[in-house]
Image 1 (cartoon, rainbow, N blue to C red):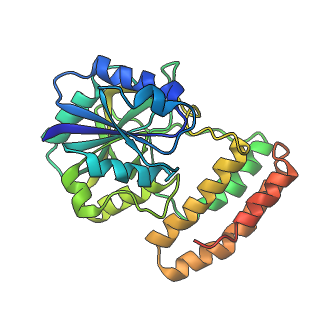
Image 2 (tube, rainbow, N blue to C red):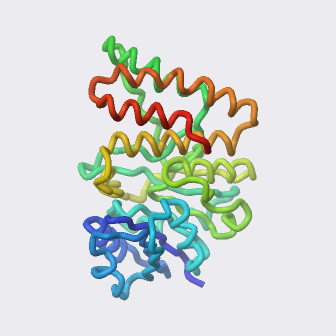
Length: 297
């Protein structure tokens, strides 16, 4: 058995995948690990460039399964005591995997998911964790904050960060270490999701089972947000908006009672009308988003 199985999902991200793997190999010591790359039917030459790389286990799916399902495919090939789900658009800056493994093995509580404080290319802290979504958050996100921004009254509240580590609702799926035993007990990524909210729903199950999700200071991982998942078929805004909206529906359907979910589906489209006040979104994209409001999940 390996110490850690590192699972990376690739979909047309060859330009960042190889540097990611190079950074793992360059910085990871003292850990018996394997790198599993699950390719979601890439057409950018990824297979020709990487499938024969002796450092990795190349697992082609033949189609774009989405993030969660592809990670689940990687799990079928994993031999590690721990699994480290890592985005292809990341770069390790230190021996992050060894540090996270040591923390996981020495943690006294019931550890679910472990992530670290992510940074951008300039070394600045970026989104690394969050609170479980609440239905009432829509009012803040879609109405109150846009109004305050329009009136120049909005000031962003910086998220709290640990001196060493702290318990959070969920850590982002860009870097997520979890013991295989926990996945066996609680389940891995739900197959209903294509992209967005899949790690949140999974870690919600961890917490319901009494496990703690932890954000750790010390490991350094750069997340090149926006560098992965380019498909060229629609605007980034529209693609991300539609996927995120549908994933939020699925999340609430899986984690809330039927009547609360029904109420959410009634109220959410009304709040989403604020999209029409955004001058940076084309009318065509606005109509597509509104149509998606009534999609069945």
